[in-house]
Amino acid sequence: MLYLYMRGFHFSKFDSNQEGRSPFEKLLDIFMQLLTYTSGDVSEALEWLNELDKQYQLTDQDYGMGDFIEDLKQKGYITEDEQRGEIKITPKTEQGIRKKAWKRSSAS
Image (cartoon, rainbow, N blue to C red; front, side):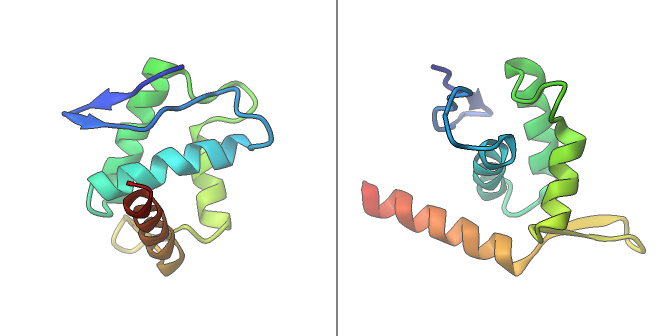
């Protein structure tokens, strides 16, 4: 069991032994939570996720942060504006954040 804390926020428990979930799905849950805390700022959320990865080894040799970012792009969670050098969330991600927030609030 591992509890993650950062900047005064309490993150939900991350269990790296969750069966039936891909590394992408595990990282996506954390990433979506971080997006909530960063008000949708993808770059900041990825920076936080990198720090959490360094501290808690969330990724491994088979699936790293680069793989995760590429999967986010391929699966339509983020887009990259090469002219502006920005990475932004997509409507798919916005909807996912709202769903997770609703589930958390209705579970309380």
